[in-house]
Amino acid sequence: MPKFIRVYVKTVDAASTAVGRLAMLAIFLMIGTLLLGAVTRNILNLPLSWTVEMAQFTMTAYYIVGGAYSMQLNSHVRMDLFYDRLSDKTKARLDSFTSVFLVVYLVCLLIGSISSTLYAIEYGQRKFSQWNPSLVPIKVMMVAGIVLMLLQAVSTMFKDYAKSKGVDLQQDNDNARA
Image 1 (cartoon, rainbow, N blue to C red):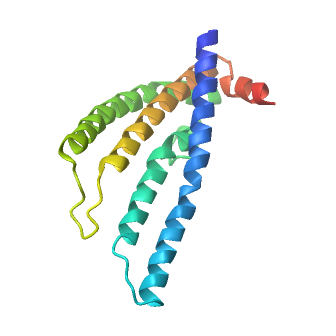
Image 2: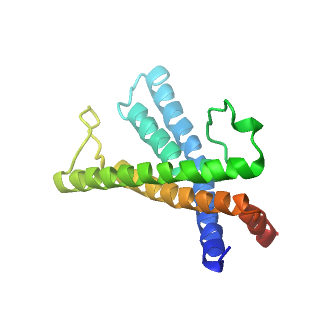
């Protein structure tokens, strides 16, 4: 594979790993937020209206930003009727083909999320609730997560194409890290 593809795959995989591992820490923020809400409501008899919504925002950020890392680790859900019976090269060819559809979907999703984010910024969009938080931060995070997922989808497509040709880019990256 050309050097620029190897560099691209290595760079995107490193970024997905770093962001994904950072996103994992968000679960502790969510647990802390929900614990705070439970303690203030049940022990102090002082319910905080923002804790559940903050936990929802945190969970949303967690799975949107962590999606690329999940894809990189190949730990996403896959419906397997015939796939497991295929050879590794055939799986790689099939994955390369279906990756094109994923990239098209993510590009459409990115266009819509950018539009939604610009709307939220321009009009100061807020969630209609008692807490009334701005939606701009979560929408910016949504765009960032989709961009990272798109970059990772292209990286995965390159790895699958290389594997279908008998080259393992993932192995090359693992050897470079060691």
